Image 1 (cartoon, one colour):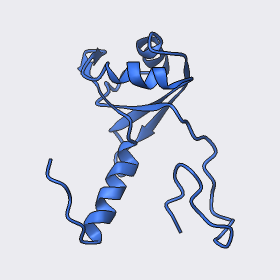
Image 2 (image 1 turned 45 degrees about the vertical axis):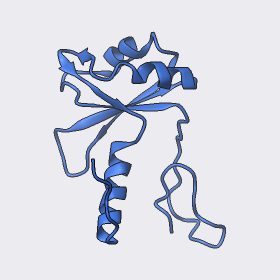
Image 3 (image 1 turned 90 degrees about the vertical axis):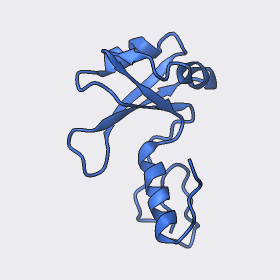
Length: 123
């Protein structure tokens, strides 16, 4: 079976008891390198000039109790485009890193590729 993240990649014949993703944002940014003091209100203020912020979700990195990132979901693609331009801007004095790829899913895909013996691209 597929990873089950994002769209439901399972066929009708596969296990229907697997958990389904309940929220799939189509216009999301992932904000890393955040101050421990950052909260939803602060991120909403930072990104409100980009577009309507529909949802802010804080998520931990796997195997870490202190490292986290935020997923900011916008009403339209405009928020993603404009919000991406804020990468490097300090939030509570800490320069943030903004991307469109979920850092947890991206890391998992890299580990799977390495385990399969795929050659990873040079940075």
